[in-house]
Image (cartoon, rainbow, N blue to C red; front, top):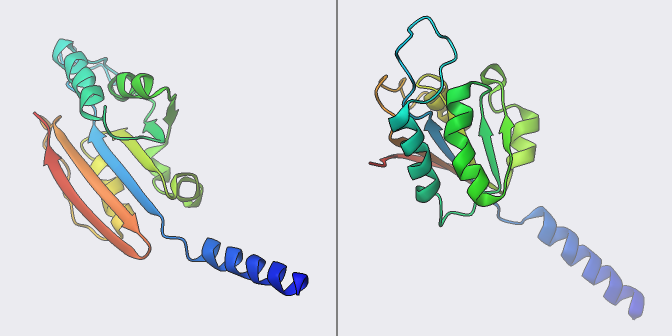
Length: 165
């Protein structure tokens, strides 16, 4: 009797683990406004407006539980991600745009809520890669206020873009 009970508990626990519903949510944003005073600088910092926007992003994500914050290695993306990561007690983790959404990234972010800071071309590309379809075009060069929200729930994928003033 005791063996049957333990076996039943084990099978139920195994079944529950295999069928658990997990939601993964990705918030993808482009870096805030960069310093454009030197057009030969390939790695500019944020300008004054960009630093303010980075703080506004942190305010926007204030009530959203984030498990991780990712950014490319450029100054402007790191500076955009930093205030939000700091407010959440997280460190900014770097990612390489050419290795977008590989098996390691999928495994590390499954069932989590993640902020990803990129660029006008990598942000929509990342969203498209997650969705498995070309839904979004590159962002306008002056679009620093859009957030792409991609949600995965079991086999269902959904997405939307919101403008955050």
